[in-house]
Image (cartoon, rainbow, N blue to C red; front, side):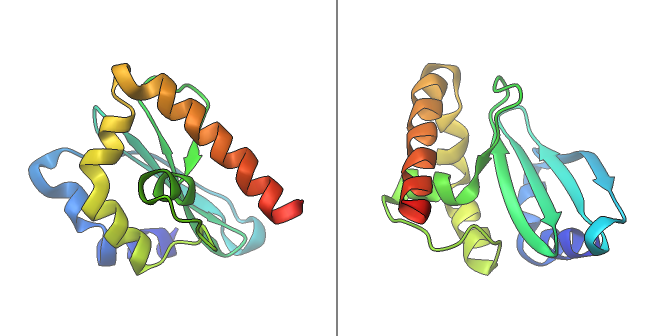
Length: 133
């Protein structure tokens, strides 16, 4: 949990600007040295910061997506068209999130959400094929 909170404090303070985003849920487990997640949400988007087996990752969900979460590397690829070598959080992903937050939110607006989910599922399949053949 400490790693997630440190990442949020160091790189994601922009989320709290205007009181749009807030921490809405969290969990900690003693497994693998302290797996944890923190969900940060606004009316437009949910961000789940995850520490799993010592690695930090970020998943994104639209307000109407139910159980479907999408990795930040897929969103970055959707927006930039560039394949990402890793989904592990670093300062670069925080900068991407800060720069493109409004665009990411708009991808999950009701009029775009179905197309966005379809494109993200396709990118997920493409990523799996690139990694595993």
